[in-house]
Length: 562
Image (tube, rainbow, N blue to C red; front, side, top):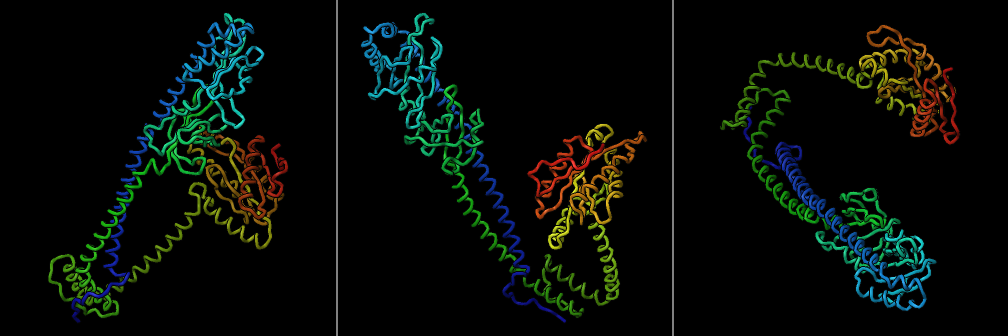
């Protein structure tokens, strides 16, 4: 029977042409995805590198500018405190009027302070001058003034919660007789002018935060608000850049730097979208280019596969007829010498040989059936190995968890008690360090044998991990589980272990935590972990139990080696 190449028809979703197109589409898509990811990550890394340099540099320069400004203001205040006029004003009342004139003149000549206040040794204001006409209450600062000749800078809060940096210095004669204190309130407006955002654009912002988290000054609009510095910035003393959520919930990029003795922190922030805006632009362009490439390659794949589908459909029809028992099938149209033509020639040769080797195929089928059965048996062996610990031959952690899930479902229906025991070898690390890991493995194998002989047939024992073993005791309450744990502990303590090449028996002990399942799998594991931890802390070689319902009570030692 001859079969000619049929006309190309609409391809179903499971056709070869569709699969080829899908593979081309998927390959192109994955390639475009990788290229996009590399492009975006490269752009992001480039921008992040600039930010990692610009932010610390901006913080350092701004901090240096502010600290120098404070230092210069302190030096200015120290010079004023040494003026003879202030000493005369504090020494006698007949010079009181000169104090106001002196401070007003000093205020006109200085660029650091917006108010100057002179107090006597009792903290009472003797003279004051202010650019705004209002003298702030600074008596409290006079009480904390530094030693003569030393300028103290503090942040004094006002009634609104805003804090203003204030410098103070004692006015003294020969530094041994303090007559009063000269206080200078730094100019907040000029201090704000130092918070420049050069290098981070209009979207960035730099501000000062006091030790209580209150924003005191900002480079943007005036005002103060609560700023909670997260862990990304609060522990940062070097100005490293971090990505986090700001006080308003917006994702930002920022850095912080302590400002010295004043106790304030200098913070610079920029919205993440603005800082990495070129990344989003690159993503858009790459997406459009990738989409065009995917569509182009998909179209080319469709055109190429269309020329391949016709002979393949003929081959499919011939294969279908062979599957129905028609072995005298021959495909026409094998004119080319390409892969498809070679495939058709090979197909025709195959059909001719099938006519002569039917019996051989049947024998091969019988052999395949036999091999399939052997493979099934091998899979069953592999399945058993997958739930068995290769060293101790006990059940492994995976099987224990699956079995526990089934037991929990069963006891939830039946109401039977279910107990969990967690065993840990005491000082196992010392054994490994002393005799080596090979000896440690031998000890684990021997311990597994002792444990298997100590539990009941209905109990499940598994290697939980490392030197930890777990026992699931069915139909056992907390008291029964403690008795079982004591039995296991005693058996291990009395067993002789031959470790390494010494051939000398040695003794080992284990600590056991016991808990009963009370409806919550998580609470049961937490309780048994606490019990095991307590057994370790109570001197080891003991059994500790903790009831889930009584977890808040003071747990005690249920059983201990005496």
